[in-house]
Image 1 (cartoon, rainbow, N blue to C red):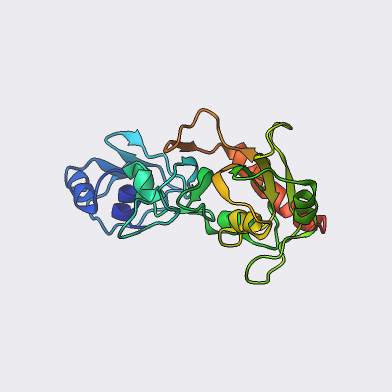
Image 2 (cartoon, rainbow, N blue to C red):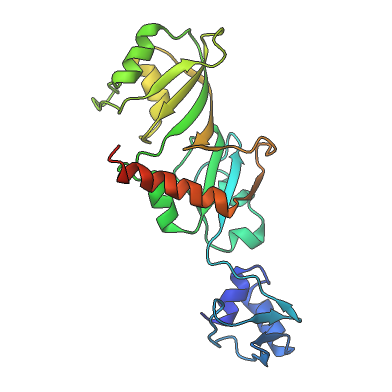
Length: 246
């Protein structure tokens, strides 16, 4: 990897800024000064330092965000703010993208990464990783609704969803519900409720698999995922496949 690309991606400034660091002799690989921006280095095998401090190189980033409403799950948009616009520059420069999507008016748990294999494991229909949502409806849910969700709901285009779980959130207010699905069709939760004659007034994703949204994250905030959280999600995705529960 070129040293200018590596350092720019890790937040040491633009490639122009990195050239200045190189010109001043502040960048070294295994103790040897690097002077050319096109010098190739192996950050996994070599010790790269800037101003005497070792560069902490991680090829991938894994972020948990509490996506706010009115922000879209995309990398670029000419009209709306995106989840990438929320990121600090040192994270945004590493070409991350959202894992799946949440509607503009939906808030909650969204993962952001630059690891394509990780994203595929969590979004592939074959893996069937569950997503849990809290919803507020314009009408009470009924036992018939619960049964329909369990057997699969026929959407407006004729598609029959995979079985889903539906139950009242607190056991009292039948307009506040929990929904668990194992696929991610466009506007799926809203369309499922529309199919049974109800409208979603508020929607929040709380879990992906067993990973819960960090309660300390306010809308618009994010944090780095722990290695255990990443590994547990991957294990969950591939365990489903090995168990034949697709």
